[in-house]
Image (cartoon, one colour):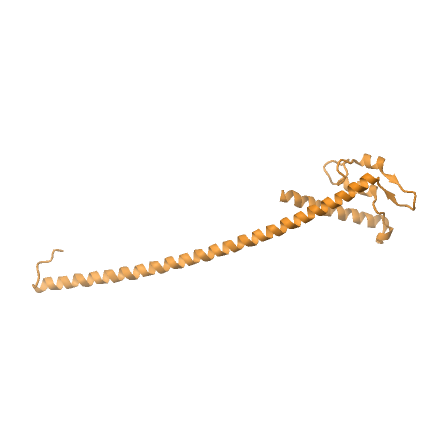
Length: 175
């Protein structure tokens, strides 16, 4: 889901930038000379990159032919406009895209939080592991010291018994 949403947002930004670049090429850099909405340019840009070349991107089930036949041409100046229902649909599309972008940003922030939390947990686990290793190493060293002390004490005891045995003051050595 995250990947699909990311792809949709990426495609939307690409589409929006392409549309705006085409507006600048067609009408110049002054945005006051641009049409509010250029359906022909929208169709050109929108139907050029999708899987269905006749479907205009972003206008739900509207096809290029349907958009051509239903748009109205204003007689005031040189501006063209699409029908009221398509204008509402365009606004709804923009609102929906804004909601998707907000959801994407929220998911992105949530992902960053989860990633940071995971990194913190891994760091804590590594620290615990290092403490455990250090504790085990200390216990091993203590065991080795105790073992050496026991071994020395045994050898000392054995030597004493052998000395007593050789001096004739005690019974013969059972060892």
